[in-house]
Length: 244
Image (tube, rainbow, N blue to C red; front, side, top):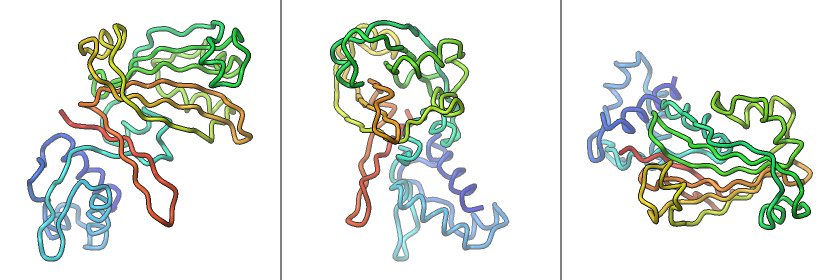
């Protein structure tokens, strides 16, 4: 019950039905709306406080602090799974998938000899039909071949690959900013030179073997990144959707 309440509150905040600065419905109101006891309601509100979406406490009613929606690192690899979790609709438009020789930078990232055959994918990702991210992904040839007969517009590549037994249980992410090139601008509907957030990733199997190298470029007015850490835990990387 508390998860259902939290999902609905996130949806209301993301759509602007609960705007930044507005008070969140009271515990009594939420209990009446959901037919729930105060326990699940307080758990839902606590989850949103932890995410930084609402604030308040010490006698003050909670208010909406921000509209961005974070994603735990455990599901960071799957854009589709993340967007579904927000209550939004993910989409994708594959621009290209091809088998070609690895360039020097790709070969270095995947620990291959330059010129080794790899499978490269260029795909536009959408949230509610809005261009949000452009992914340039390279897979080692045995893994990438599993996608050549797959409809890459049908959903999550990672879910398909996992179902085929592909292990991508480790990943290293690097976040920086780049200027949109001509392809970025055309597909993401921004001007060439527009600043984009880039997440570069090398995914590995449990034994450390590189499987995928990806260059994902996000519109910063749609998505942001946050690092959360504590002395007792490893840092957690969050991806956030900005309502616009």
